[in-house]
Amino acid sequence: MAATAVGIDVSKDKLDVHVLPQDESFGVPRNAKGIEDLAGRLKVLEPAVIAVEATGGFESVVAAGLAAEALPVVVINPAQIRAFARSLGQRAKSDPIDALVIARFAEATKPAVRPLPDEDTRFLSDLVTRRAQIIQMIVAEKQREKRVINRHLRKSIARLIKALEKEINAVDEEIDGMMRASPVWLENEQLLTSVPGVAKITSRTVLAELPELGALDRRRIASLVGYAPFTRQSGQWRGKSFIAGGRSHVRSVLFMAAMTAARCNPVLKAFYERLVAKGKPKMVAMVAVARKLLTILNAILRDKKPWQIA
Image (cartoon, rainbow, N blue to C red):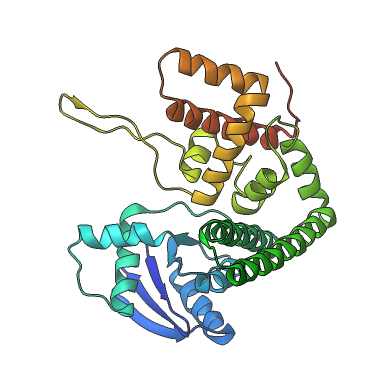
């Protein structure tokens, strides 16, 4: 008998559910009672996988509620669902149709089910994301400030920048408090920041947004972040390898850390210079440094040993 796959399309007020191979569809409210009823109904079916499409945060409470009932839930990147729908030639779109497509995606790809982050980790991730959003707003306002001549507008921009900087400090204090309250996070942060080039922002970002760090092998963790190279080739044609997908915020933070490490970390600096000396473009060499840095951080958390030069 074929394994049961469930697709759930999440909207603000409702969950549309499709079950394969039974080809059964139904809907429940997106509230505590609806999620509880859904969990009870799905337990009877004993599904192999329950796929929930990420929808701007609405999916979090759904995934957490189902995971709490020991159901095999996995959150799927919406870009993967859209690409899969195009491959099926599926042009029509509605919530029930989306649930069917998600279920078919889960049935065909059998995505790996991993433990979801706990509530504290999700909150830390939200704080880290909020910090990045505020920084983006500050950068945007400073760019506007350079182009504005009118002094009244410049004062308005300056007031907003000052308010945003104050908010950054408040978020940083909240993150600091969370780190101090958790001996595990504090230990892991000390381990990660033992690597020259890795500062608190990098360590806290990976702890919050990459909880799998230290639990997966180097290839899987690189793929999860989007630092695993993909080869393009067809017949006798050989294209260049490239990176894509993954967790973009973690990837960009690691890249910035790699730029620092390529200057101050003796191992990664030598690695970067060796690649450039072999003729690798500087950007390609820096991506390789970021991937190697990720591998180092993964090994440090796996072994619970701080950085040391062999």
